[in-house]
Length: 397
Image (cartoon, rainbow, N blue to C red; front, side, top):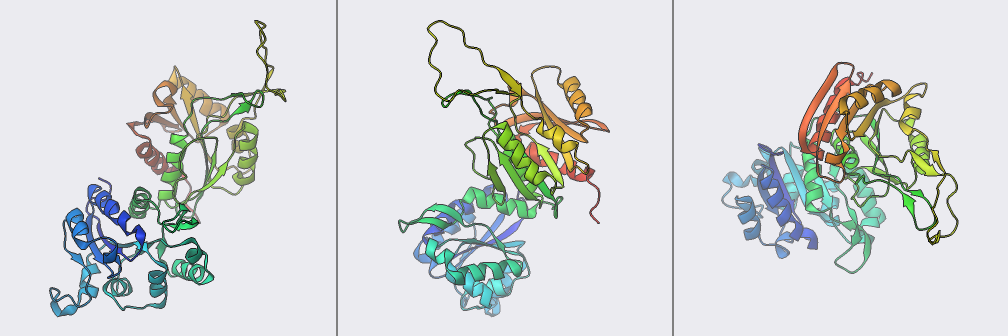
C-alpha cells in the first residue's frame, strides 16, 4: 500500500464538494494511511462527522474548545504527529484565512500552528475562483510553500461551468502519493510523447495503430510525482491529463515532431513513448475516396521523420529514453535500436502483450546491460523506469 505508515490530517470546510471527502477518506485508508479528520462547523452542514468517523475509524474533531483535549490544546496536539495536512475542500474563505494567519476555528488554528506541510484542494464557484482576491491569495499561498491541488474545470453545482471544481478524490490521492515520493527529478524538465498518431488518407479515413497512450501517460505521471516539470505531447487518446502535467495535443507525426522540436532543446530528459506512424500517405485525397467497384486502391506512402533520432542527434541533446514495442526477438531488436540511435536508455516490451492493456512487462537496456522490471501495472513500471533514469542523470550543479 502506497501510504502505509503515513499520518494525514484531513480538513473539511463548508462547500458542496465536502461529499467527496468521504471517498477521499476511504481511498486514503485503503492506501494504508492513518487518517485523522478535523471539520469546520460549516463543513458539518454538508457531511456528518459520523460518516467520516466510520470511514476513518477515528474520532472526528470539530471544536476548538473540545473538553476531551487536555488543556484545550487540540489546535496544537492534533497535528503534531501528522506528516501532512490536507484540506479538501478548501473554500475561498478558508484560503483567505490561511493567507492572513487567522485562527478562529479548530481547523484554521491547526493550519497556523502546524509543523508539517499543508496541501489545499480549492473548491468554489468559477467567479469566486477567478476573482482577483482569490487569485492573489492562491499566489501568496504558493509563495508561502502551501501546496495547491487543483482546482479542476467542469460543471459546477450552481449550474455554471469553469474552474473551481475540487479535483476528484482519486486525482487528489495521486497528488498525496506524489508528495511522499522521493523527488528524484526535482528541478528537471521532462518531455514525454504518448499515444498513436493518425495519418490521413482522406477526410474520413486514416492510418493509425492500436496504441492507447497508457504507458506514456503513466511515465508523465511518474515523472511529475518525482518532482519534474513535465510536458506531455499526446496523440489522440481518451485519457485524462495527469495532475500537474502540461499537455500538448497533436494528431499526425508531423504535428508531434513540430511540438517536440519546440520543447526538446529546453528539456533535460526526453522519453519517446509514442507509437509514431513510420509512414504517411504522400498525397491524401481532398474528398472521400469512393468505393472502386472491384478496382484495387493503391496508396503512395512516404516515410515520417524519426522524432527520437532527431532529438538524440542534437548538438547538446537531453537524456533520451526510447521505447521499443516488438512482436518477436525482443532483446535483439531492442539492442539494435539503442545502438543505432545512440540512446543511453531504452525500454522494450512485446507489443502483443501491452497495447491497450493496463499491465505490461518491460526490460530496460543501457550500457550496463539489461534490467528486467518484471510484469505489473503500467504506473508501477513507469515509476521504476523513472527511478532508473534518475540514477543515470548527471548531478545538477
